[in-house]
Length: 315
Image 1 (spheres, helix red, strand yellow):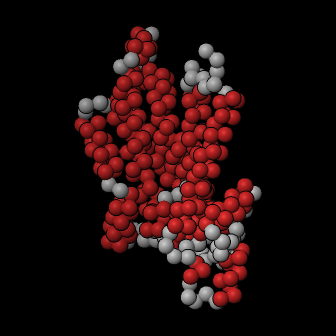
Image 2 (cartoon, one colour):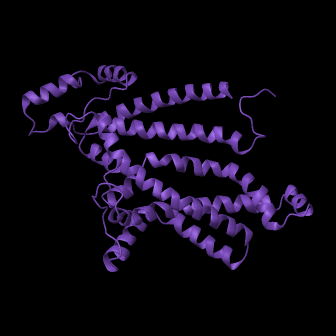
Image 3 (cartoon, one colour):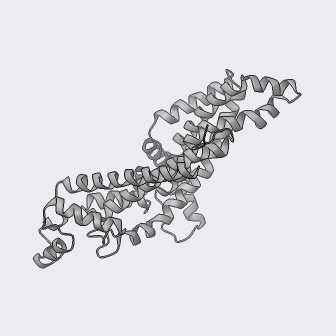
């Protein structure tokens, strides 16, 4: 297992290096530049060019960038929050993104698992058909459409909830109410994905031989399902649930912008629109790191969920 983890960490480092290099060239290939702003004084433009080596060829800039990257020095923001270190900006925006996505996960996981189990146990009944219709609807319709519908119907027409996120500090009641619609918009698609995968796996597992043996030993259908079928069905489902848990740190770019959530999603859009290259690269680096860590955790979780699975062992 240690050898496998070491190999994966090395592969993750190489992948992260390739991603960050590609990001550098893609971002610098975008039209426009902060130093081309006609309102920017000449002396300020020259200082920025000298500090970030913008007056040198791109390949030379890339060499300086790699040197800074290896020391985790991404510089200061140029436009969004001038002269503020980019990682300080990310730390400032991170808590609201975590709050929003943790609430979405706390709503998504139990509802999705419950619907998947019910659909499998009630296979080919009206309950199953109703849940399947919900799954198709939630998967087919993008989250931003649900967000717009919630804003129009719940907030504007019925006036039950605020349209935008509250600016209150801390988790006040008004802020929790304002987070209900973003949480719902984030959760619908994820609930459908969990329900679909868990139903498919449970339906296959329930008809397996070891389930028949458990029933012959005296367990009821529900007892055999809870004790044996659900755990085995969670092995492939971990591919869905574990990345979903780690995605609380990446946020939802579209939903955050629709509801004016001042999190990482809004920050990434603002940095790209402002041509704030150091901040954009830092945010994308953060997203990439979280994605790679989640993939590693998914692979390692297989051996935890099912002890028969051993990675890196000798045959």
